[in-house]
Length: 194
Image 1 (tube, one colour):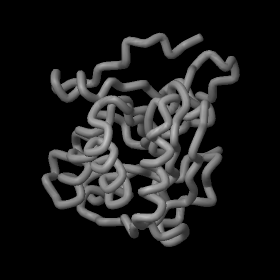
Image 2 (image 1 turned 180 degrees about the vertical axis):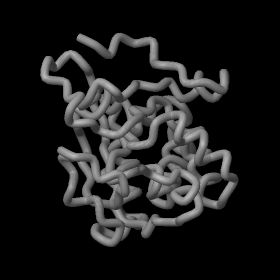
Image 3 (image 1 turned 90 degrees about the horizontal axis):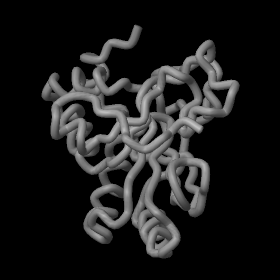
Image 4 (image 1 turned 180 degrees about the horizontal axis):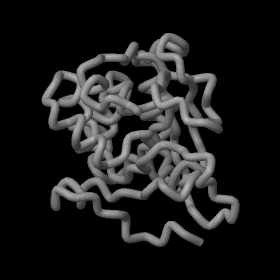
């Protein structure tokens, strides 16, 4: 069992990222620029990104990669940025840096998607701890449009291919802006089942 309070108190971010894909069509709607951050504590059985669970492995995130991401996002066909991991909500240094820059450069014309092992409810619990780390999680959450929440559960794997953007049926597609507005998880209105 993951201790959410302990996670909220611990700064695990080492400002590393694992990889970057300038143009992807599978990590959210439309063409996307995709940043994989380093480090995750959830250790989901069947995780396809096991190699980037170590917070100490990766490439130092700097202005060069950030400028490259912004340049790629300038392409009119690119709909937005996707944050994957590892665990973005535990690598807030990198994620806050790029999300702040995206909002400065593009406002809301580019959307931000994020996959997290936290459930919405766990994130709210973490944020309520009011630690430095949890304040960064809230700051990051406020910049995200769509959050895919929940740990991958191999026994709930989608073998039908009907669940868009989710690997297992427990994961939800969350409309973050609406969820924050109503102080309750609001699933996205779009049809994310084929």
